[in-house]
Length: 290
Image (tube, rainbow, N blue to C red; front, top):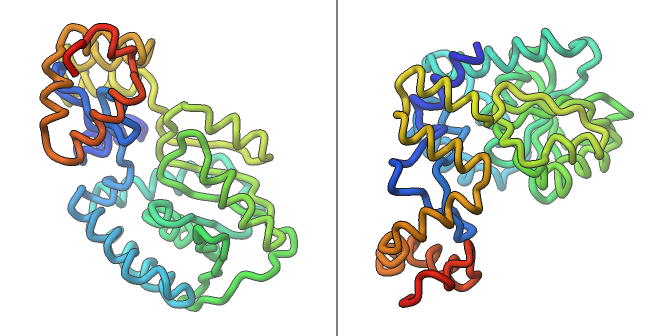
């Protein structure tokens, strides 16, 4: 199933690798060779964006939105092979690795966790706790919602799309569960970017579990399956070993890349300006006319 999931991630562009000479611009102003948009496993980027738009329209009505999110994701589960395969993989992992009798609730946080948490809760036969960024929580069970007030020490499995540094858990999801006297015992994510999130969860008393870790093996399997070529694989592996040096060497060898970005579309130019202003990769020492 891990190999199937890797196929899903690349087929849907949930993991997207750049051409060898065109790294992506990240929001921070840094550059890198790949993006991870796990929510594209909903079936496609288009379908994922449609669900995000629906969530944004409905999420302020906290007492009724959960039923609609559950209905829509269940309908997609019945019709989309990629999404169904992903949800089945999450559910199977939970059954094989946790004592499901000890799981009292499945939770998911605003917004992208909801792509996965509602259907995992459904298939495990557990009530769903819909967590919002303001730390409020709603329990959805048997098509009805109620405000979560006191869970009386119940055990929670949190299902999410992605973990990086676990900042959302630390800032919102764990405090929201603690606020209603619950115990977030487990976290299960589709993708772990291996940026320290697992260690943060451990410090919070949460067991960290994942289906796919973004390590060299993921990209090596993608190359074997023909999703990326040798040049893309080399760039990614170099970046994973030493992201700062790899991107510094790229900019030094390709000064036109930054200059073109600075005169490009508004979003790209803004990110390129952040790179210059913050002197990422010590760029001012070798690209003088910027």
